[in-house]
Length: 122
Image (cartoon, rainbow, N blue to C red; front, top):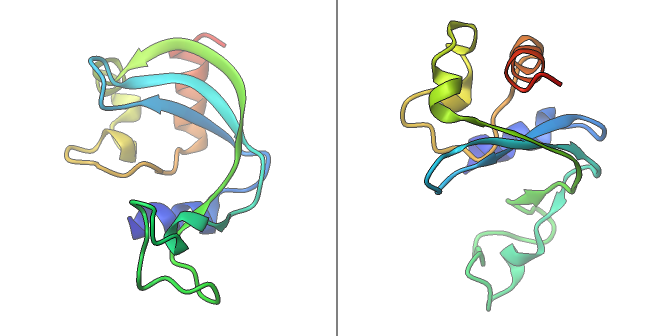
């Protein structure tokens, strides 16, 4: 998804903390914290004809898809999607928007603080 890619390229910086979010499971939600450990770099699978992620439009001189590396920081108590949605302080959080399918979304400083301090009690 281009929007998720653009968030990664334009906003994610080495050292940024990120929530590790479980989706496609019985109880989706935040399950941990990681840290961005590399700048964005081209995803090699877009050039591999044998990969399910091969993209015939991608060129090595102008890649379309990128990765960042993250490192584990800590596992947290699961903060489920229903719990996140129940707090008006998080009403504008992009991840909680109905129909959101993005794998990467920005989290504001206030949202981060509310989730880590009040919900995770870190």
